[in-house]
Image 1 (cartoon, rainbow, N blue to C red):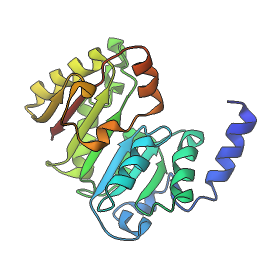
Image 2 (image 1 turned 135 degrees about the vertical axis):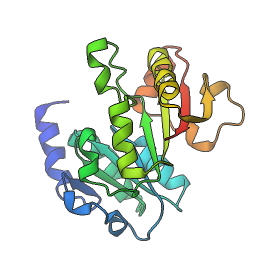
Image 3 (image 1 turned 30 degrees about the vertical axis):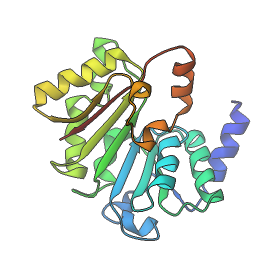
Image 4 (image 1 turned 60 degrees about the vertical axis):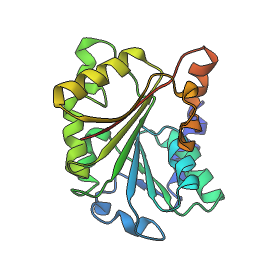
Length: 213
């Protein structure tokens, strides 16, 4: 994408009513971003917001916020939500390691991590979104019962998540090593992100973990 296109999208999201950029004033007040107060679900590093928008369509009884630091990516999901008048989807431009600045204790009921960068180098382990330091942040905004959903093509990342879950003594609710061989998969499992389509074309199996903090 050219810099000109990126700048145009950055300028446009400034006008979007469903995009909040580094807005700490929303902490504890996210229900005001939607047309009703409902359980709040986050999609971290949401990219184009496929899961934020897709699940908002499927589950009108929940509110969804997609987080990403790159405004030109958020643009696609936010624009789709506005075009389709999806009232239970919003987007926040921020760094994930600062989410406790934007969400109050217990404000979040569920978190989705879809196709994160596996950060395979050992020196980058602390940047993995299921690293214990991130889990502590998720506890701050969601409390002890917040549910984490991880969808990944990376066997390395899937195994690492298992290691962290074991070390932390967390409860696994669902563990699927091949999503598309799972006959009773829920409808949200059929939402495909840009990266998921890319990995599926290369023949990779998609893994899914759902666990409780």
